[in-house]
Length: 184
Image (cartoon, rainbow, N blue to C red; front, side):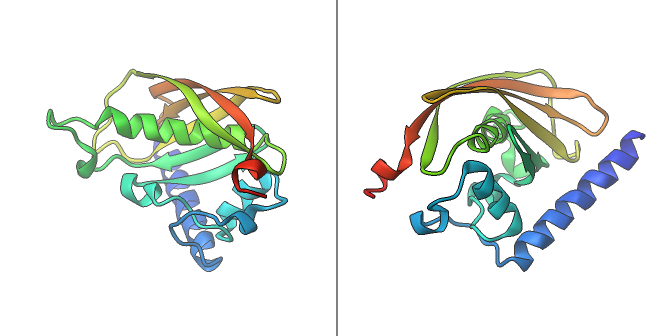
């Protein structure tokens, strides 16, 4: 499949996800503890994609959205915009970092049992190609490398529809009992 067809397919997939989220009543916000109680990490992520749980407000701020989740992987799609530029006239490194951190963390989330949470302990990032407000859609594809009882690791890449690599990252996440933190 050529680059233009892939780009068109990606844009259609994002539009379908956004329509499905809106139809499910989706809105920006944070899930309440009772909304996620008893759900595995994968079930939580799937509920986000159906619009049953609020999607994170940062999606609107930075212009990227969850596109796909599965066991041990998560895909986000974003398009850098002029509002994401730094004073030097390039896309701010924080845009890449947040897109990658989202794919990494959500990939880890899909491996967690009910009542368990995670937090990023380490994020290593390499930007290898500049993106701009003319680049078009980019995808961050996160995959779990290891998921244990107390720690997980994952890797992610930002790629364009032409397969070119823009950035890559790794993470280490701490896993914890979320029910104790919620006071249950």
